[in-house]
Length: 166
Image 1: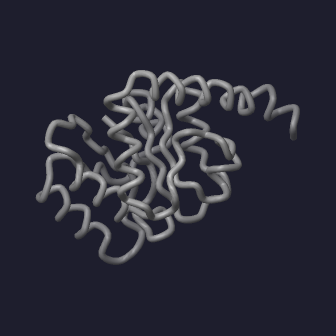
Image 2 (image 1 turned 60 degrees about the horizontal axis):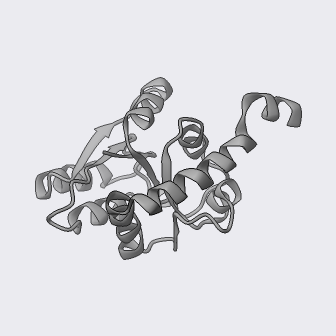
């Protein structure tokens, strides 16, 4: 299971998540679990249509912060496809939970993950995002590399460090 935590609105690029799900290889066992309320017109209809089109996508709707954190902890990986981001709390949650992260290379995500993070894909690039997910599913060495990099980055976001930074 891959968690996607972000409201359905254009800046969070929910369409990328839906297209990734629809184009996964037949042998893949990836399932995208998308949490977030539909905040802009048409997104709930699009999410429901995608659920009908493929069993690789499930829209969970809005949920509390605690429920979202639990989803991230249960998932194997977080996908964060934002087109623009200031610094996503869900990425920090995933890092602190020891989860792999695949994210767009928008400025906020790069700021959190680092410019050399191996799980970044170009903003809006469905094929690149899908390729990274499939690679994470099938290549243990790539998963280890993602995890090692994520662990190093997670040290930047400990409660004590953040408290001292304030």
